[in-house]
Length: 135
Image 1 (cartoon, rainbow, N blue to C red):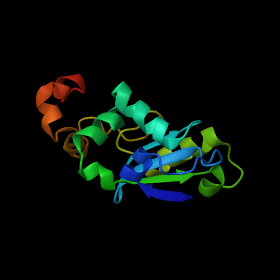
Image 2: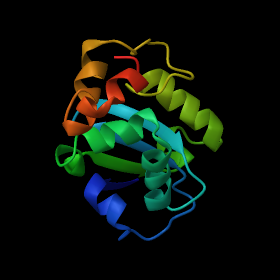
Image 3: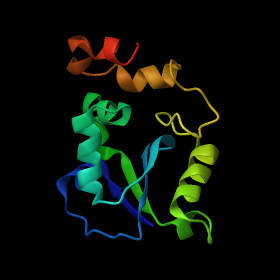
């Protein structure tokens, strides 16, 4: 496992490690998102931001606080030895219940107070982000 912060992951200072194809974004103990990447983590995070995904919006809306969020890069072996990447991702989502993952997540976090907390910060919220994400 490789642990870094969001600001370092976005800066592109990490070496690319294809065996660490799972990533977990968290704010201390709050798991925000779990995903798979086949590209450098910097490129993947910027895709989230550029495409306006929920985790991308949360990163932007919570800047500069989001710069201190943890980004954990994992291999399937770090999760459960013997699992492939897709199965390890499903396992992580089902067990860690990240706030912004819908698929495989047994919790419906959309509309929860914590969900709203992360999407109602900053000036972007005043510029119609609220309507876009259903708040």
